[in-house]
Length: 76
Image (cartoon, rainbow, N blue to C red):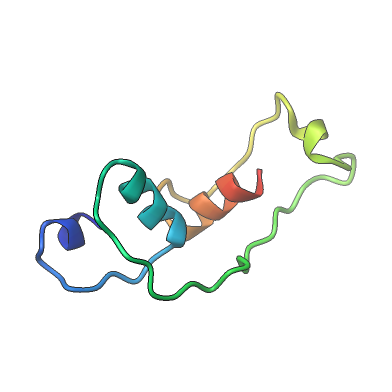
């Protein structure tokens, strides 16, 4: 996204969440395609039956800023 916003590349392939965050910060963007719904699923311990059961719990992700990170935020 930084390279797109700097005009160094003409197109960016990434998550729609990244585009939404950039647009919310004032970037002039157009999303031309999206692969919604997300392919990611939230995997939890058997004792968790609803989103409310996650309150106060820790959630693990692989890297901040990658598609799985934004998908996890969206799911939550």
